[in-house]
Image 1: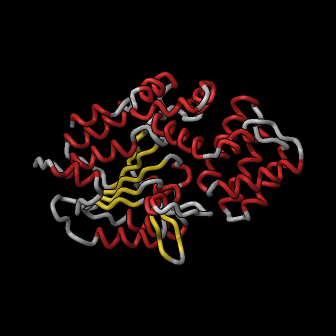
Image 2: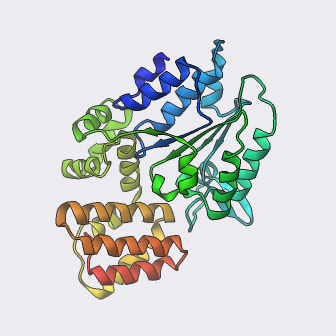
Image 3: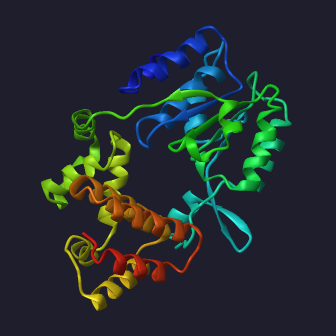
Length: 319
């Protein structure tokens, strides 16, 4: 269990999991709850390696988990629906497919889980299912998952979420909560400073670096995601997003540029970023609420450009 030493700032979560392993008292379902990028997935991999290796040491287990090809492990993440077929986020990224709606955990994926759990474990004592970003589960899949959690038998579930309040209370109640906490900004900065791609911040001003750290909510991984999102926006659009615009025509043009250039995930990230700035710098709860309404419109598949036009005109600026 030495691998747990590589997880920083999550002493309570590690203590709970190490105790479960040493006492061989593994719960049928866990909910790894906390902000993105603070070690939830990394911890899950270490935890399941310890379980799959229990009473035997196989050097290949870690590699199989990393490559997602262990026969007793099923890793589920939200998927996109394209022409009636589910497409993984990895495939979307690799093939640079532009998506207009966010990914979801879908009913067909829960059916895949049920089929997986119906088979005897191949090399270990139990089948393990990890569901990433479980808060993105849709209603039909959520109801099917609840029934599956009630009949886990020898299966083990690890649900990973940053928004547990989005889950059915009956799903939460069937899981042991493993809390992951935010680090402070100094801890995040120290960890980020050790990362290989730290030099990427040379492309932005120090002030922007501090703002992205602040927007990372104590998560080194989230900082890297924030930096990636910010740098993925073209320089001309970034410049417009940094200035106050009050001209109606220019705001309408900005709405068009945002929706033409950014996919739905980038747009949702931009809303988060703007909400953080509106609150931290301006204490403007009205703007935060207007941006939240924009998020709801995008998630309801309202025409994105129209939704942005209405919001930008309402708040009369994008900082």
